[in-house]
Image (cartoon, rainbow over all chains, first blue to last red; front, side, top):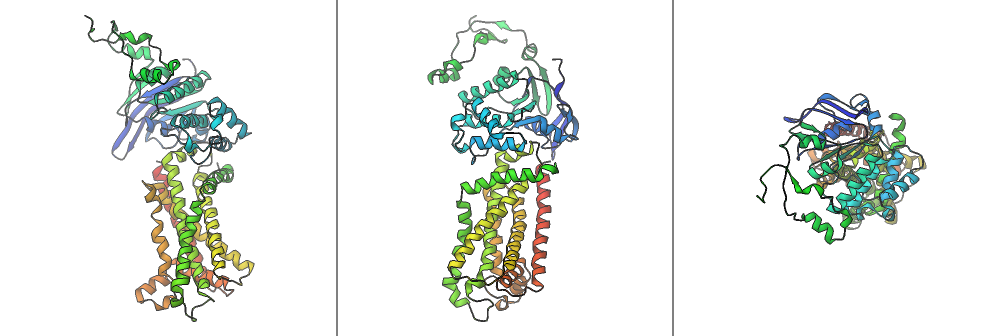
Amino acid sequence: MTTISAIEMRGLTKSFGDLAVLRGVDLDVPGGSIVALLGSNGAGKTTIVRILATLIAADAGTATVAGFDVRTHAEEVRRSIALTGQFTAVDEILSGRENLVLVARLRHLKDPGAIADRLLDRFGLTDAAARRVSTYSGGMRRRLDIAMSLIGDPPVLYLDEPTTGLDPEARREVWRAIKDLAGRGTSVLLTTQYLDEAEQLADHIAILHEGRILVEGTLAELKQLLPAATVEYVERQPTLEEVFLAVIGRRDALPDNDHDAVHLGGPSPET
Amino acid sequence: MTTHLIGDTAILTGRSLRHITRSLDTIITTALTPIALMLLFVYVFGGAIHSPSMPGGSYVDYLLPGILLITIASGISYTGFRLFMDMRSGMTERLRSLPIARPSVLWAHVVTSLVGNALSLVIVVLVALAMGFRSGASVLAWLAIAGMLMLFTLALTWIAVIPGLAANSPDGASAFAYPLILLPFISSAFVPTDTMPGPVRAFAEHQPVTSIVDTIRDLYAGQPVGSGIWIALAWCVGITVAAYAGAMVTYRRKTR
């Protein structure tokens, strides 16, 4: 990547009381790419997102988003970003369309109604547009949530565990939406605790553990950190997820399994 | 940015007012308890309590100011509740991550509280009228009453913001209202204070409800309000300032 960084973090630290959550985080998100921040619960993923969204301040270190310092140019940073938090933040009492119109009006855009209608169409929510969000399924809420983030086309998007709590089908819906976004040039910082999600979506993967980035690179680069791959032939059992998707008639949603015969290391069961 | 503060507050107030219009039960339940108390005190206890020496005409005339304050005290628990739900659902964070005037997130809840409570107060006054409440107050006096009630709502609303921001459960966000609802009982709202024993009387005469109730009673009886109105105003402004400061401290602690 030769483009300017959409996000740059240098030596970010943050403690809550005695608990040091971030202990010096350095990470770049190159413009137009998807970077996955992979880590278990409590690793500090959400804290990073909240600092980058100017919701809380870091104790030390710097962070710039779209070239603006989060500490000194918070207003400009907020103009450049969209946040989809860990818990779908949608107004349950309003309809889907009203939620979108609300954000469009708060961003002071012209013709909020037309913007809402375009996004409803793009995220397959037109039929449910006038219904209260409290009647939506988990997948629909998440799609509405992401649609709300995209209003005003901010160049940088934070997705904080966007598929946590979703069923496999809804998860794939969200993945398609994210891939579509990156295709349009939006820079995405994605946090996840699912390895396959990072593998499916991200150009770069950074592993956050105990408040530090342990490793960072493309999937291929990370795979080189392990011993060389050995080729082995095993009879493939379908995963429960594949069975589930096949049974409910979503064969089109099955993952591409070409690489599944390749295992990293370990003895081969056939020898 | 300050240029957007009023516009953004208006947009967000429109949003939370929809929460009220789509669950009108919050307005009705707010009005229900004060109306029940008013019926109870006028038709059950009233005959025994009321004496000709009490100021005002009928007992409902005497009682109404206190009932109005109880209405406000129970109404603001919904303000705390709505704010808590926004905090828990992540809506507050979503709004704060947008390029808007940040204070508008709280001010929208405050303005909504003023509107919602005004609606409940109108319902209670209409019921009082049906029960025989009459006032010869001038338009100016009624405006003064409305202003006094709004100030009291504002003061209690900023108190409600604190648990709304800090609570860990919906119950915690609204339970703080109960002691406030009881405050008018230990005041001149239901009976004159001069029958109360020493310490109780001292408390009753020096707590905010008594001065506010007496002022409103004088206003709609068309009598001069005297210096009591300044004490009432001082209480309202003082509570508002203190509660606002407390709310800001809580808000900063939550967003650090």
